Length: 159
Length: 175
Image (tube, rainbow over all chains, first blue to last red; front, side, top):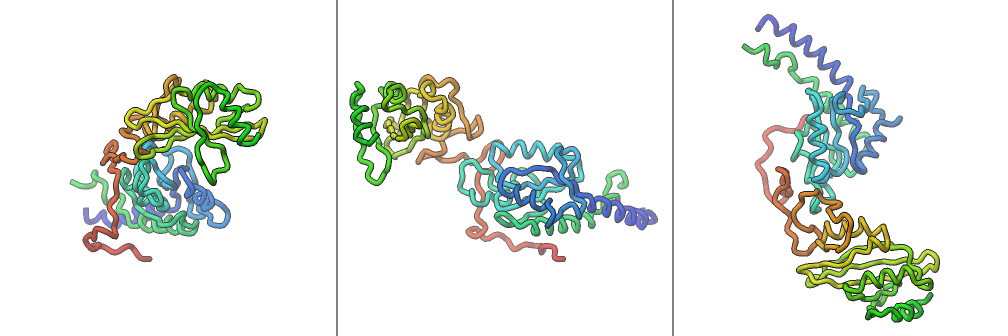
């Protein structure tokens, strides 16, 4: 495998550059954070300059930004949406409600944090977080994607 | 119509009504025995002088030892309001449905049933509205204890300020 390493690393860097520059997120919002998500796609904090465009179907999305309060009733649907996304997929928990239940932590019907059902990559604190905070979260996710050893990790390469 | 006139009209109905002393409340509040609630509701709507054509809100209160169902009636034609209260036994709260009198009561009564367990006789579709369909318990009751988990999701989250966790082994990424 040793002689292949430099080639794989370079190809990895190229693939990761392509993936981080076109993170397509799922058009999904439940509550107030959704308004901030829409604003982040607006002209001032433009998510499109990172290559991030909203997709209506999870089949075409790389990223799910969970923006808003998730109730127990909605949690099963959120899990279903996540399972419909193709790998590699990422989750950003936006706002207090998605991080830990937020303002409604003592409520009888609110899921206390979306990480009870999904593997979360980035947490954004705030109620709601400013659009600039969401833009920074996308940048942090880009940093995370840059470091992924995509080709070097494929099971087919391992003996 | 003033409160006294509404009360005089209501007293003409054959059922016993006791006005409640609701000082500070702008609406006239009247206690109704649960057995006669439906006839009172019909009379409130049909009577020309009362003319309560709208049910603004239907809710219930868990008063510790009893459950009170509260009806807020509004007359759009005459511009006056009325509040009806029916006190139910807490162990088996059951009352006639008024969804035939005012159609909007349909979902209000479903919400009451969902959150407080009040059963409405004669309701066309009495099932849960807000909570999941297989939820156990009535959340707005004072003695309700939420389940520890629902469909594999735990319903509590430990407070990071109260239970000191082990120090983080890796720092957050810095740019």
